[in-house]
Length: 270
Image 1 (spheres, helix red, strand yellow):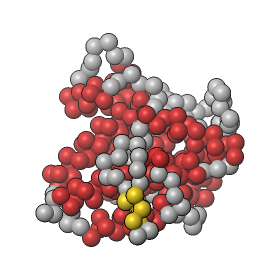
Image 2: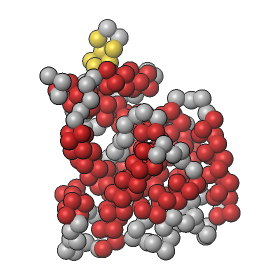
Image 3: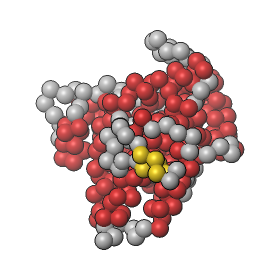
């Protein structure tokens, strides 16, 4: 990937398949500049906004489930989401995972429309939709200790889950860091707590988007093809107390989304 620098400004390709090569100290400032550009442009029609949202949701559901080893392809995911189609030779569990993550995202939007902040109740409710393939444990903090194979960090004991989450929420709301850095730290810590028996990653990635949208940014879709880098971000945090990898991961995906919107907005203002 070639990044051109002109007059000290980064000229970043709009149609970027993998934005993760771009790492620079001014990335967060650049994102905020892009947000201001979007605010200055004529809004999209409701019809086009809905089309863009539907396409984003399809890819988001595919990728967030693929990261957790769902065998559904993007095309199969689209069939499930748009036609409520149960596919041959695919376990019903994966069908429910796709439907559940769509419902979770739509429910998240309802909460955002009501201007609600994240709390323990919100986290449980979002998880309830995410884990439709395991309703016995959906929306319930785990009661048993768990161990993650080959991980550099192990989850907290069950009795520490609620106090640790309360502490994490307090730190998040009180931090003066840039919001994307705050979100990166929150995600790393949330996954480290591992509050649920299953569905933590999908719930955590949903919370990333909750926090982005709540603060005036755009939702992102962490791609399955970047799963190794995503996991590396956790290793960097746990082994070196370094959240740079996760911050840059989220920031670059946000920048990619903003560039997409700027292009669409400009095309539709002609």
